[in-house]
Image (cartoon, rainbow, N blue to C red; front, side, top):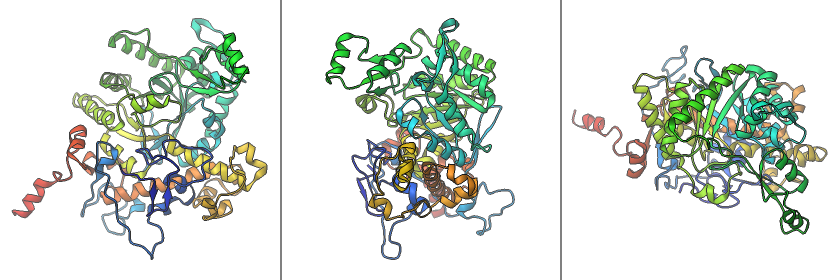
Length: 550
């Protein structure tokens, strides 16, 4: 498709096989580089341009129009006009420059949540990756002014959390150090843009996570219901290599495979034939048989959460079929929810069984095309359709543009999972290599800076193109508390933002909220048929003929 393993124009390379997003199919926290996302965490917006300026010419390889995918959509450009300029600007060429493109947006029904860039993180839950690098993700997201999502099971897998049995199988959380650490880490740098979102699954609901969050944080937190527990089609997984921890998780009520209580399993573990245990969550909705029952259960859950004091409630759904998609959009709209995140097949943060990820569910572009179609049906009836976020294999600025355009005007944000985690890895590795005394604290994987980083610099101020932007934001004294992973996060987000501004300016849209489906076209007929986005040769063909015949 679009991406080969090496990109000579940018000087980037992937370590392994390349996914549709442009990331390696297997992204390692200890990677020494350097895919486009990895390198943009260091040099930022510089990576928008071909390398070795003054010595080269560069041309596109033009392989983006093969098959049906987001890479088969192309971005429209116009030779005249300007739309969405700030009220104090004119269409003078001095005002119509890409840095003046406004990327700020908002989502929500009654209470609006402001966002600086139309971007949010995927759900970072009970995986050890999320735990290790949380400070980088949370602080980076808060500084950039985007929503960060705490995924499911954080309380349940925390050995320091205390949960007492309660009525109706709902426990009462006495304390949850890990969940509190994650929320507090974001709120410390929250300045009115973005949000911290806490997800609920079956076990979280039983444990009383919503009640705990409402009591402790009130309306500072958005609560999120989830359809489809954890990893794709089944319950979320983590793998643990301790028999004691596996037994702890079993006692907490999780499905643990193989069952650590079985004597033969314990014997196999002690002798090395079993080396790890997989912890799973439960499927939701198993006691529901009809659409009417699903609706009643869903509406009851929303009503209950509002009763706890949550004024902002969101829903996350996966790449199920068309019936579930329609239910998600319809029920979320009827319940006046604040955001619906629709995650297509192809994305993920590493929790899914590999063949399930490869073969299960609806590919992102098909699912998102139908989401627009179904939202349009409700809108035509006069309903205020729930704001939407699209997820599922996005990594670059053109992905953001295309997905926003495909779902316009309903789509307000794009959700990135793996791509937005990479700067957390890179920055932490750099910090550990430069400051060996902090290596364990920041979960660094390098003993020294690899050549791929040394070619950029040897100190944080040299390596990170956005170092001084972050310093201006937080102050020189506070910089000692900002992990390098958060600086890398800002740097990559700055590259995405700049690239998105350029694409929008080329489409003559100077506010991200002005983007429409007319700003993209399909690179092949099959994509046009699946998405409803006209083929490149058909767009404006009629007006072109009028010009010729005038």
